[in-house]
Length: 193
Image (cartoon, one colour):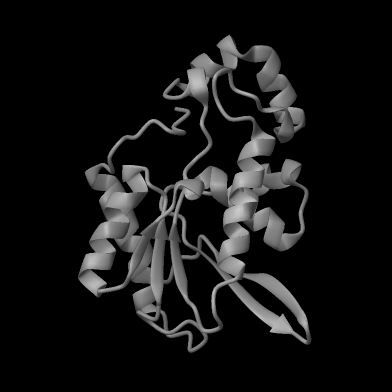
């Protein structure tokens, strides 16, 4: 289903998936990503993200900021529609979207370019955080389809190759190399055995 601004709560399975994803960090022996070293949590206001972020903030004592800009794209009239129904009712735009993601312009919703710009503005605020910040960003798959290609310097039309399941945990490292700020994708959807 197109679950943009449709504000469904996390299911029991969703809670399990989120717990499993954050447990992967706690179990990590990677000295470059020490266990329980987040300094703050930033979350989308939609309850499928916010509820878990609030739970985690309460259990860890970490500060939580809920930011409107990190919510999923607004699919407008399509929001909550089954994908099979969407492909039929928006067939011409679906074909355009498959060729060029920037062609997405849901009726009474948010066009992709506005969505991208909103996310990249929010990303710039994260890049301004002080050195040593370790932020857990609890957000959505569509958001990750903007941030990760930006980090990798990939065209947004190539995001279809990214598998972004529910409760996907990705790690991006931000640092200065010389006098230039650089980002690198350290891990994506990794599961520890």
